[in-house]
Length: 315
Image 1 (cartoon, rainbow, N blue to C red):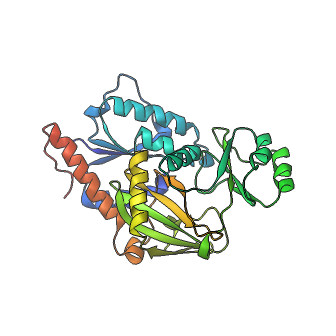
Image 2: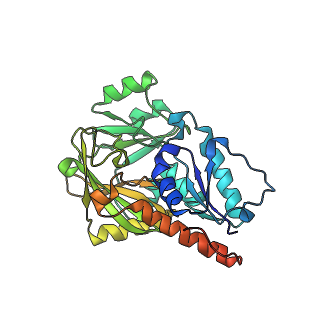
């Protein structure tokens, strides 16, 4: 028998479309729940799995599973040390759980991003705004889904929140004080990649200015947001593919906007964990989960073939 694909995840609801696609095909795979997982240093996962797809979420702490975050780093290190093929492994996950690391990477690549300061105590927040344009936002360094992100329009407003202990610092007690960027057209663009290559892009119209818009939640609308297919410039696609290659991300997304004040393109979020849009065929003309399943099967077949297994993973 060929070794199965292992899907390591924290939030089961998000991956139902992928599980359904794999089940329909009869693909040989196993589910590995982060919250229930433990491993021994002498374990031999390379004998059990053809590959591991890491779908651990940086927002796990919002669901009382923050303990899984740093545990996952150790597990991924273990897998890679044993020679297991890991999709979005240690390098990718380190970028997933640190917005500061993302900004450092973008700066190193010469790509523009919102100006920000990194702090580790709430009382540092006001001083960190020196040299930044107002309004500012304070966001947890480790988080997801826009949770804990707050906008402040004046220094006294920020000081009051900091003094009251109302700033969300996240599981790693680190936060970003960042310029709030007025998005031209009140929209952002999210570019998805598969196997490190451009897959599709979405324009997300966010007239309400919310920080927690999830295009995977609906069929084109979500709490005042409007989601539609978008074709980015070739330069953007090249930038995105360069970003994910540098971050070690094979399956994820990059988000950008145009600063309405000066027309500059700013990349502001790099995701090693990214859910596909809910209505793929209706919005982008194909089912992204089918393409993901194809790729996973091909990768598993390659891994099994290297060890002399015959792949019989789908029917």
